Image (cartoon, rainbow, N blue to C red; front, side, top):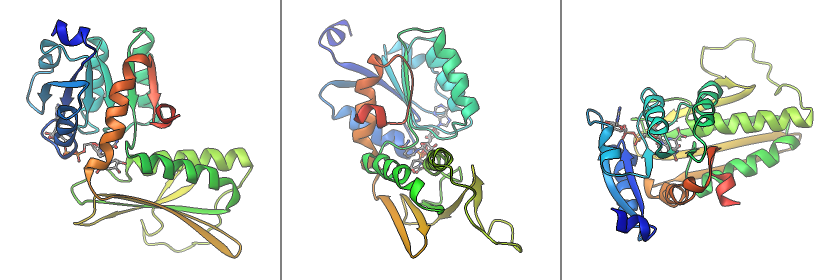
Length: 254
Ligand SMILES: NC(=O)C1=CN([C@@H]2O[C@H](COP(=O)(O)OP(=O)(O)OC[C@H]3O[C@@H](n4cnc5c(N)ncnc54)[C@H](O)[C@@H]3O)[C@@H](O)[C@H]2O)C=CC1
Ligand SMILES: O=C(O)C1=N[C@H](C(=O)O)C[C@H](O)C1
């Protein structure tokens, strides 16, 4: 163990290792020359397996109902964390910041989407937001997904709403007066989000902008979970030198 640390190998533990994403992360870490997969933990396993194995960085792809307990445990035990699990409200993020305030030197990266293309899709959408009076988000996922709307759509809506507010745009025009509940999607910070679930899909999102005489559609598709792996490995490599909370992958790409 000491030898590997001296040689700069990052000792990685995976939480949710038996899941769709967790299994893919285990493969990616195994295949990375500068990392060693030292612990694979899933529901029912003891978190102490992570520290027993000397994990320096833990990657969490579990579920929104358990991720806060996992993260608290990592912070308490001085283990850096890279988190892809969804469900991070502003309140949750503040809680994590609070835990980290007492742990100088410890890093946590929480990213709603580790796909590089998805990060760019969100950046392009944020840039376009100020120029269009209308905007709606359509996210599409596999039907085994537990949460709706997706973490990516929620994050995108927040970014777009902030850009619209900064540009002084008012509410998105919508004359709907008679609605079957849900027909207009969920309202996230004034942005309508529609969640589609269908067998065959993996993870997809369209941001549809409209103004007089034109529309702009920005679309990203993940056809395979391997698409998230370069972003996950990037975060594992970066997290130990980024104390505090890093939200989303953008600062790591820059
Ligand atoms: N940020 C990103 O780029 C991405 C995020 N996700 C998110 O990652 C999460 C997981 O997605 P999937 O892998 O598709 O789900 P999944 O259901 O296939 O995997 C979740 C795994 O976590 C395990 N688990 C549950 N409770 C646990 C606990 N207390 N300790 C350890 N393991 C536990 C489950 O047994 C399961 O194996 C979701 O929130 C999803 O939205 C998914 C894809 C990409
Ligand atoms: O559950 C998934 O599959 C995904 N979850 C994340 C989300 O909710 O945005 C990221 C990606 O969309 C895949």
